[in-house]
Image (cartoon, rainbow, N blue to C red; front, side, top):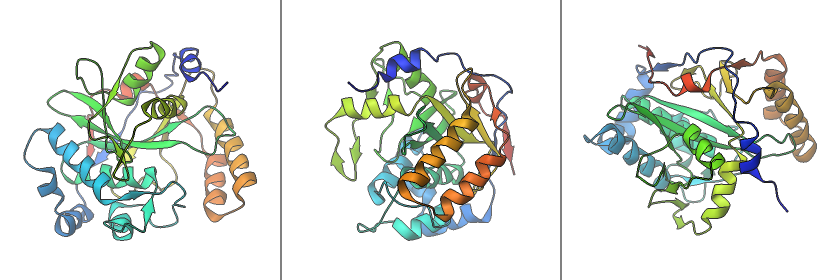
Length: 284
């Protein structure tokens, strides 16, 4: 019998709140102009509501970039480099992190608050996690989750679009949630929704994000904030997980640099409720 992830989440509902979440968002840089010039980001987003613009960009990334889970993140992790590598190239793929970086930076380039969020499992011997983007929908005054790997977002039974924290709470309370109609993986319909929901539940034990969101910032080491259950040590878990990855997959520059970063990191646990408040900080 596999792990009962809803029960595990239910046993860890209370989150640390050491600091308020103070996330800054950069909306002005020359690379955003290049994204517009080379890829027509604002035209793709369109002139509808913030939500419709965000969904248009979500579907654009999902349609034009293939997901490849074992992509090694060896290329510069910013939208222009990643689009040059993978845009409309059916024999090349990138992983969920890279797809979320592209989506987040394209959203920021379109004037929409956005961030990359790491969905993390509890187990240190798990070599996998998931990464998505979240966008702030101005007309709803709330954050929502956008998953470019599956071209999807999630709703409750009334049609309200959800963020990761809301999805987590629905899993705990055994409340249904639904993926949007265009859910697909590399252009193919996803038929096993139970498996996908278990994957989400596994990876919603704790969340990570960056205190600064902007072009080229997502793979820079530093500025990481953690949203984690009380009495859970993210630092210890990440070091054990990297030891596991090195044992399973071998030494590489990525793991070496990552281990050095995690070893020196003073984990900053932030209040998850404040993480989901409307944004107030932006960098010009």
